Structures are given as structure tokens and as C-alpha cells.
Length: 192
Image 1: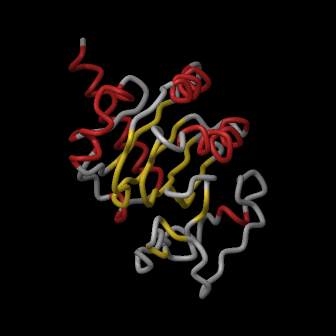
Image 2 (image 1 turned 180 degrees about the horizontal axis):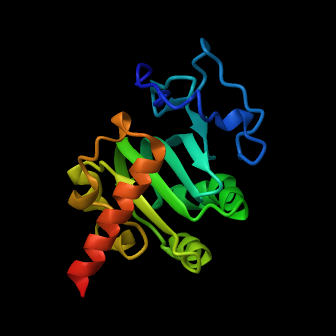
């Protein structure tokens, strides 16, 4: 796992540690010291902690005018034991919501497991952003991760086949959000 680096192609446009509104403002990642691990697996030092011992992230891009954030995940999301959604919400998401971010895209290519727990924090999160037509989308979830998420968080988070296969690494950040919004609209049309 130490070879898996966060996506870095947009660093010329945005760096969370240089953004005064970011929860990671002023944070310095080592280039050489591998100090964090998920279980017994050392991870690349460029990943940031959200307060969970098994879930790490990198805020790749934030656009405050358009109110969106793009975040890459690594590890295991475990609400059953560690209530990772609570840690993520308190340590990262609340500050973003305070800065008027209402649209959250999570890249889940490296999210290896998900264990469901209480849904209170998901409900709170969606309530806080829904007045601004906010949403949360998980892109490229593995099938077994989507199965683990199941119905537990489906009413709060958009994920699954409609949100997989988007070539996000080849796109500009604003286009990713446009594609996700189009897929959200298609999903809503199918429901009606």
C-alpha cells in the first residue's frame, strides 16, 4: 500500500495545505517518512488523516464559488467499530460545509472495505447541505464495497454502477462535477 499515492495532477490548481479555508491548511506531509499505516500496511506519506486509524484521504480540489470538493479515499471505511463517518464529518466535512461546500465527490478506487453502522451522521450531513441542492457521490466503488454499503446509506449517498467508470483522472475538476450532476438527474428521472 505504500506505493499508492493520492492523485496529484491538479496540484498546480489546488493544494489543501495552502488553502486557508481547508481543514488541512498548514499541514506538511513528508516526502520520505512513512509514519501512517492501515493495520500492518504502511501507506504513502502524502495521505491525510481524518481521525480514523483505517481511513485516509486527500482533498484533491475545492471550488468555493461552485461549492464542490473532490476527495480521494484510501483504506477501510468502518462505521461499525470506529464510526468513521463521525470522524470524517467532524474533522473535515464540517469545515467544508461552513465554507459553503455542498457537493462532495469521493473517489473510491482505493476504498477496500465498508462496514455499516449508525446512519445519524449521514442524515445530519445531508440535512445540512440539502437546502442548497447538495449531494454526496462515491465514484468507482468496488462491487463488494457497494454491496456492503447496500441500503444502509443509499438514501444519503449516491453510488453504484451509474457512478462507476467515469474517467475522472483524465478530466478537469469542474467536468467531473458536471458528469456526476448529469447522472444524478438521470437517476432521478428513472425514479419518477
